[in-house]
Structures are given as structure tokens and as C-alpha cells.
Picture 1 (spheres, rainbow, N blue to C red):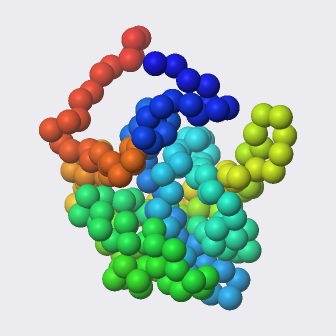
Picture 2 (cartoon, rainbow, N blue to C red):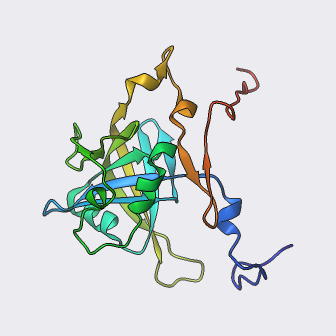
Length: 202
């Protein structure tokens, strides 16, 4: 099949776009407002975008609390969403009144960060402390107001659960990180599905 996205006349019961660009890591973002309010939300349009220096980015549909809080204070944390925390991660996607703490709503315990003010999720097996760099409005072809905003941050500190450092390497598969697909679907990385390939020439 083929369809043009300008009309989205694919004839399917649901838009297949997010089922094709998959799996997408989940940016489980902790942010804090200037008044000290904490927000924890999962974002499926998320990824690492640079290594030196390390940078990450996530895309927000509209100016939600996480984006607003990050712009107020210039800091955020990306918590690793894993299979064991899948229900809590999902609970933090609930639409709550501004200022209501999603971390408390999901029964999660905050842990202090080292270099930024927003807390990290204590049970998360890894977390990236970030400083906000910029927000980029994602304006569509032909102009018009953006409906999404890309938030870019530089990673200034990294937490890793020591149990998952094996022979000097992070055993990512053992952490069982989850990633978003389309519809209501998710994927989970496991040691059984991990494989390695050496690049040509190295």
C-alpha cells in the first residue's frame, strides 16, 4: 500500500506511522517548576542525538508541564523505563492537574539528583541528569503553528545501577528496557534477543 500523509487516507483503523518507526526508546522525563512542583511523564518521541558531548532530545505534543517546567528551571532527568516499572511508567502518563506529582500518583519514590534539582526515580536502573539547551518548534511544511516542540538537553551526569555493570560493560539487555511501538504495543529488550555485529573495518 501507499498513502500520502497530507491526507492520511490509508484506509486502516489506526494511523500506522508510529508502528513503522519502532521501537522507540521512552524518555521518562522528570522536571521541576520554579515553584518546586515535580512532573514525571513518559515521551515516546525520544532518543540520544549526540555522544560528544552527550545529548538527548524528546518531542512534546503541545506545551505540556514537562516542557514548561524545563524552560522555567533549565534542568531535567531522563529515567530508564524498564519492564519491571512498566505499570508505573504507564500510570505517569495520566492527565493530572498542573502541579500534581505524577511520581507520587504512580507510587514511585524520588531520589535526589547530584547536579540538577529535579529528582530521579529511585527504582530506575539508570538515569541521565540533563541541562536544557533549547526548544525547537517543529513547524510543518507550508507554515502554520507547530503542534510539537523538540526539547534538547545535554547530559551532565549519569546514574547506573552497579548490578548491571558486567566486565566493565553495561548489560543493557539484563535491565530489560522497554520501548514504544504503535497502538498500545511495547517491546522489551532481553538477553535472549541481544546480538552483536562488528562493523566493517573494525
